[in-house]
Image (cartoon, rainbow, N blue to C red; front, side):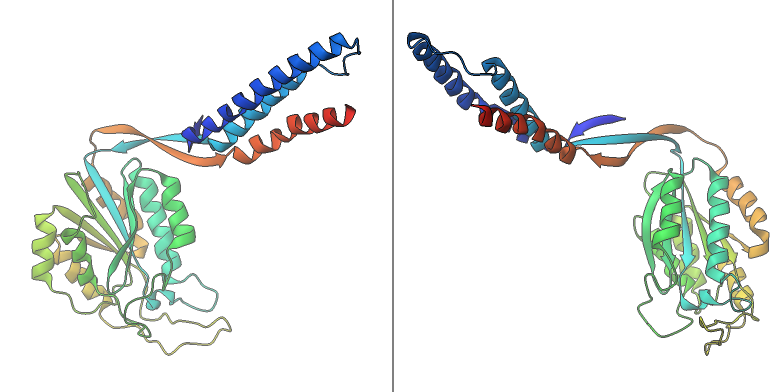
Length: 319
């Protein structure tokens, strides 16, 4: 925990009180001389009190202008030799379920992803969506809270939508090639991609996938959710005009073979966890400090400045 300033140079505004304060002291000295010559009683209150209040007001104004913030920091141990990316299918077919009110494929994928994430411990994990493209939500981070917040508030079916809207089955596992072509992983020797999808994908190109994943040393695990009996239901319980694509299990297997990975069904999450732990194994780690829960203190400082200001106004009314 610490206090820092967003605009420390703005705190120099506190020195603006120096000239008015010097003028006030000289004026008070002359008034005191005249009062002594005329043998007048001094007014109530102390000149020292007024000076102290002016200084306090200037200091508080300077602190407020510097924008103090209260930071709580957290430490996370982070593996430095391995990174993982979790890809979640967000195409509309992931809304399918066994019946109205039952968990959807995406709900089950999210639950499985959370289990796998917890099992990986200090391995930095990123999150991306998968439709007809792969879009990262967060790059590999060791902070479990970051993972939970993205899963809870950010990613979801049709968030973001596929470029080809209106089609129930728009996902393509070929899109995962972008992880090898772009900078999804940085500075790690071992790389793991865990894909949660119903595998209702368009045709894949195994040769290109195999080459790209091998070049970038990316190991892949695919967890397939869903079955051909599931349907998409409206909030009222009616069925949407969707029928599962056949051959999803074969597509998942073909993809895993192409990238030299492994495919599991959703009831084999523990087996997927064991496979992931074998890939990440053990390795060196270091502590990473992350700042979080930044709370601005400026409004409270300016509120406190009202007290010396009120004193000056009250003092003026007494004279």
